[in-house]
Length: 198
Picture (cartoon, rainbow, N blue to C red):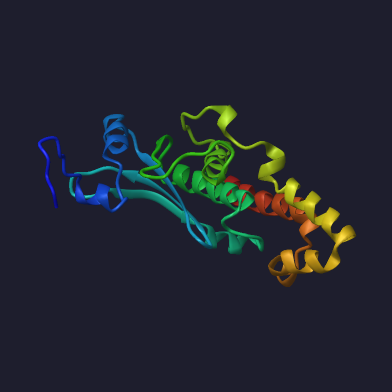
């Protein structure tokens, strides 16, 4: 490797795209727990971490697979799925005695109205303290999946074959995509009921 006079070697984890040290430093200097959201190919995982020299300690965590216990049958990595996962984490964190944190996105970008923002909205709606601008969070219609339900209803009328192919997983699970909003509200009510009981 050619090394010039101004060449600066990057830390290994930065080269591998695993850690953004500038963001990490700002987050750690806040002296507050870190909220980390990760959306994979099938699930949404959220953790609240306490940074330590020996390694971050997990204070509370949730995976969207836990939504299955509350009857959620739609995508666990969609905006509604991310919101419900965030709502669940907010309830778990408060039960564990964690009341506030700051969002730490690491090497990933934060997109206003995206899945990370939906997860953050769910956490905030659960009563968790998180410094975030309301304008960056998705609207209630988008969080509830109303845009998907409207598209499904329109597609069902115009092209039934495409409708059946596009929403095959939902239909197989026994949920009509045009009724996704009702399914979302029912799952949300179950999560809030369990939270109230705790």
